[in-house]
Length: 146
Image (cartoon, rainbow, N blue to C red; front, top):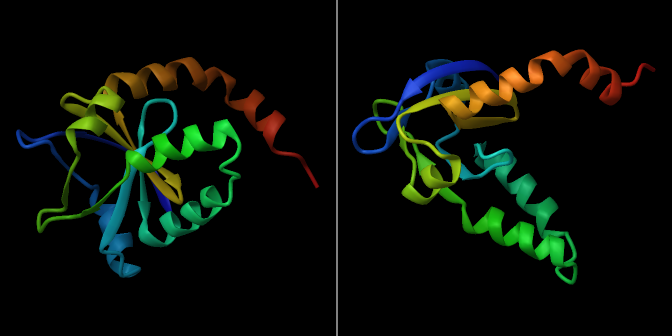
């Protein structure tokens, strides 16, 4: 659903424009509201409402008697907020999420199938540079042939 890498800059109010290709997908699928939360590897996750509800159901089923499940759910859901694009296609990133992601001004917006990730540009570049050489190894470990 979401694919590609897009470089953007936050405006003075902390808003970032969602790439036009992603906004087209939202329009085609009648998506108006998204959920923004803390992601893994210090990026932010953006989910459509449908995908968010699926994720929420899965994480809600984790046993709250397990410490790891409680800690994960607290961090994940306390960081969540719903957002809507304005008429220019921008969303506002709350200060606490910018702090979590180390986002100051320049960002990379990454399409990762059913979610969008927002990265501080320098963090994305570090991640990419340190992992691009392992792409084949990761594929070999994760993808088994039938």
